[in-house]
Length: 316
Ligand code: FO1
Image (cartoon, rainbow, N blue to C red; front, side):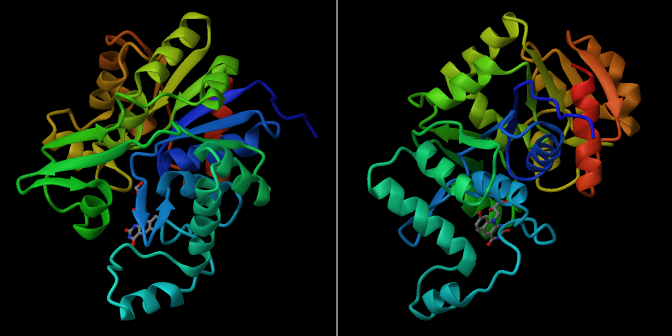
């Protein structure tokens, strides 16, 4: 058996495409070589507990516990707690499963006892046997809101309660200006030989991470020092495979294409990876000052994830 690549890699990720590529890299790299920096703008307090959808999506997927059909939460889930909460008249449009509640209880207890968010998350990951570090972008709260014709909605209100139906005419990341990256995030960026911006929603999954000034600076410094920075398009053939990224790009005035996404990342990345169906978009992307490469980027199963991760690592 060939030995796994142990050069340090960082991926910036939200909950879906980014999580899948993180899983592929996790499978392709030596244990501990990968750090995932996750968006916390989707985090939300429910029933007195902190819920971290993007962190938990990555942690569950890497632990082999994710319900991949539903697209969020845990496998073999049951729903007795939320049903009981509904009987008490609590708001239950945001569905938390019984097993998932265990995660939020354990993490919230640690935070109430004074642990930093990152330390609490790392403890949960270790308990699930996940060697990759899944790092919240900051220990400070950052919360995404989406502006619609009826006003501002908190992210989960827009995403789950309103099923992403209202047109997004603005986004904001409350707390991002004051938030600082954690020492763990800065150390991971500094140690990385490759940093990947995963195929997550550029508007509400990656932008909150990049909105933290000191983190964005750290990426630029790493790049200036020779670290390669790659981005993978979440838009394939003009559409997002999952979620509202395509509609959000359109309503916020961006091109709904890999070029539109590449424009958002111009100046930050060395190489932009697009799907083979979009290979003809390579020239306009290269005119933005980055290399472009095309591969089959659809990650239907774990083999496809590991294959894409391996191909990406080979482009370093
Ligand atoms: N997504 C839904 O569509 N409906 C839900 O009720 C829901 C509950 C939920 C609970 C915990 C969790 O970690 C994620 C959950 N999600 C749910 C997914 C989540 O809202 C989004 O997928 C992400 O925030 C977007 O990346």
